[in-house]
Length: 471
Ligand SMILES: NC(=O)C1=CN([C@@H]2O[C@H](COP(=O)(O)OP(=O)(O)OC[C@H]3O[C@@H](n4cnc5c(N)ncnc54)[C@H](O)[C@@H]3O)[C@@H](O)[C@H]2O)C=CC1
Ligand SMILES: O=C(O)[C@H]1O[C@H](OP(=O)(O)OP(=O)(O)OC[C@H]2O[C@@H](n3ccc(=O)[nH]c3=O)[C@H](O)[C@@H]2O)[C@H](O)[C@@H](O)[C@@H]1O
Image (cartoon, rainbow, N blue to C red; front, side, top):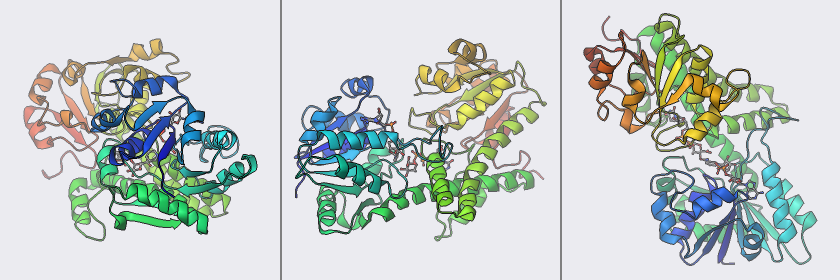
């Protein structure tokens, strides 16, 4: 079969860019992206898109109103489509069985039920959300139990591997596209229909076809392995700080081994983002379900190490600032979980700033993209800062890095935005405007520490002893 109309349920960080790129690359296919969230859909239909991604506007503005539509009319889009992507959120469960590690599949289930209830013709239903292994089986059961006569649903797993901040280039030029299907005649036909969509722009040799369960598990496995590399280099960063080894040099030396490779070995204040922690915990839960406690403990350690890295950094800041930051002005540069996105989900900045607030510091924050309302929402913490007004007592959001650093006792670089690099910011100007001694803590290894030390800064860098190279 040839797909002519696509519906994507969920207009978020994945559904929006992924299906906008399909519309861009396949002008002959009509793509409708739907969501229950009216404000989000209004934003997709406006000049001010709801998410910031380099290159996204060009793609959306080129196709919107032609073969790309955003709507809250979920039922109509389901009914019109030959193929439906389910790209809804799958957060970690907060309560009930598996709370704290299992994925909350309520949104996947409700989208699936909706498809079964309103579809009047056969559909290919594609799991785009990241889900535990064998979720497709549950979706199939729901669809088959609720659908009308003479309708069939074929389920595919097509996990998404884009990273935020580079979503459009990742989608234009993916390392691979993964499509899992039931190994039946109908399943393989459906798989082929999705292969044909991607091969409008992705070379066929980059399209991997597998069975459903391999595809579902590969997504969790890929995220777990990526996060594991970061926790590995961060674990080594602690040893570097203690010994005088330099974590960048260690990463470079290890990464030059072609079996290890250079990517994803940047030490940091800890990984953030909506998925790494969630997906590893998902894997941990799966292992526990199958009575594999050693496997569960192995992967859980990746998350434990990440939490430890954040704690270690806060501890280093406080101990360097003479064991107290009470009433000290701390300039925090960056709030997003990585550069080139406005997304703050699980950002290390949230943990750090909450800790600074607990220590009664005065935090002055600047991030080039994150919405102010989002910052307040992320920092409200029952018992510590219960409301926006409470947060404002400890936090001032600034409109530039210079403003945040004015009269500060310490600058903490949390997100690696290019504009924070010493090639972009005038750190002499910042030094001159700060209280002395002027401290700077580089949680992203983006600054030229020797150059800043020459200016007079006291510099502390993750994974580097501050006297490294001098003794
Ligand atoms: N954010 C990322 O970079 C990546 C995320 N993923 C996975 O993709 C999935 C989606 O993630 P995001 O796009 O980040 O989430 P998101 O939270 O940005 O978007 C999900 C959207 O689905 C909508 N939604 C929920 N239930 C619905 C329903 N029944 N009908 C219509 N709309 C509904 C929500 O209103 C929301 O706008 C998750 O499973 C995630 O793990 C995979 C790869 C990358
Ligand atoms: O499933 C998902 O959601 C996605 O999760 C990650 O993408 P994302 O979280 O958007 O961004 P990454 O570039 O992976 O960065 C995640 C975190 O790790 C940190 N990081 C990354 C790389 C590194 O070397 N060091 C490091 O600390 C980043 O700063 C960030 O906080 C994966 O890279 C994607 O392939 C995957 O599709």
